[in-house]
Length: 233
Figure 1 (cartoon, rainbow, N blue to C red):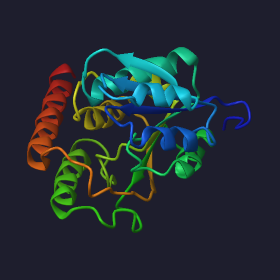
Figure 2 (cartoon, helix red, strand yellow):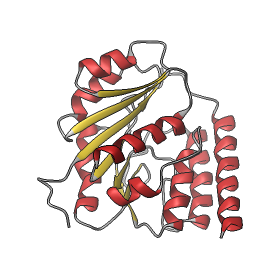
Figure 3 (tube, helix red, strand yellow):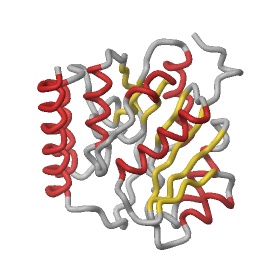
């Protein structure tokens, strides 16, 4: 168990063209952590400027490199800072920063190396579009078979990582497949994972990527990393 008062807890936010939401997310997150870091992944709007204005450290990618690349930059920075806990949350207001302590607690108490905020424990996934829900279920089933059998939400972007996990599971996948790559790496390294229920806020007006294309890309990425791990072992 770590001393919560001495532990360095950082919130890390990958962001791309999120000027509508980023200020509120940063302002809320700073209440629950020691430091907020935003990776501005080649935004063409004021995402980075607003994040910095409201107290975040900003890592800037000059071009859009993808969600996984943004995560990799945030993992790297958290490791440089010697963070004891790193919390990843979305920049679009989908995750409630007031739930950060819920994710951090199992790490600080030595119960887990990774804590996943699940939309499928309790009623946190209410309002999730059915096609997206089915895609998440399929990807989660794959991860249950390949990694953690009790997993309920393999695609949740709301997660907490211990210092050890930060060092071991930095993703190499550039796109959205990074979330499942991390789970496969965690399992291969014997990391402990628990889930906690979280609420999710969906903005129906926000344009979303093609769910089918996104799902197929994640499935392909998951199979690629699973095969690589098998060959490598």
